[in-house]
Image (cartoon, rainbow, N blue to C red; front, side):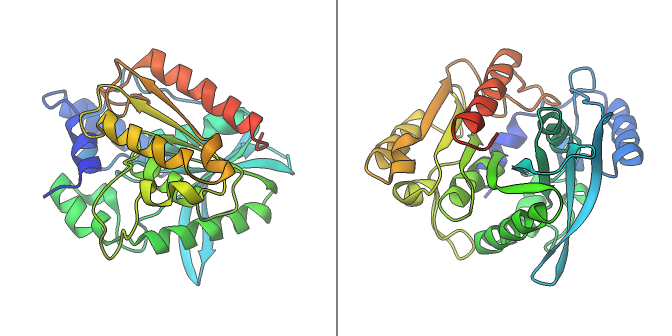
Length: 298
């Protein structure tokens, strides 16, 4: 049985598009960036995907020491600058591929040091999977939340040693990463978070003992939740449940907000997929930047 967040990411893809075009584009991305799309995320919409140039930026792959494990990551930042605000960019279920790397470059163009650590690196490489069920059962389900929290702590530490201002740290994430954004806002040293359609409720398990609704009351940083009204995998009653939990919590919890784009599906920011909704994506991006500014990250 697939997790709901995996199912809705996969269901957002439209089968039957040109596999040749997708393969050619994936090859080009691997050559140019060293990051590609997981085969399970095929096909992509090459005519839609945004490509942000790296001119004026220091951008590319780096390695972060996390408890002795050398964790790969993608980072982008204004070239030659230090004392930069930091944003942790947390992958969707398909890993740190070109869309996530491009999102880092977009943040860098806005003046941030943006870092996307590869959260599944210990468990495997999502780009090697062609079936969503195997990606879930063999890789994603084996990634403990505790490991993710520790890896993000290590990423923050790395940022402080590589031009980042640790008094100005934010986090954002998409789907799988949206859920992680809520969890890290209750755990780590961030001033604000922006969660894009991350799952809010779920069953507890050994690797996922709590979910956002369980930690809502003890948030240490306010989170802006950006959700789709037509997201069949995240019913609006779960958003309402989260809102109630936030109202009964800490000052950061009470300061958290939701924006629901009534006509948008899941993954409406993912510009390489058919689920992309330009108006909602652009509005959400503006709100994300403003949220970081209001709460002292930018």
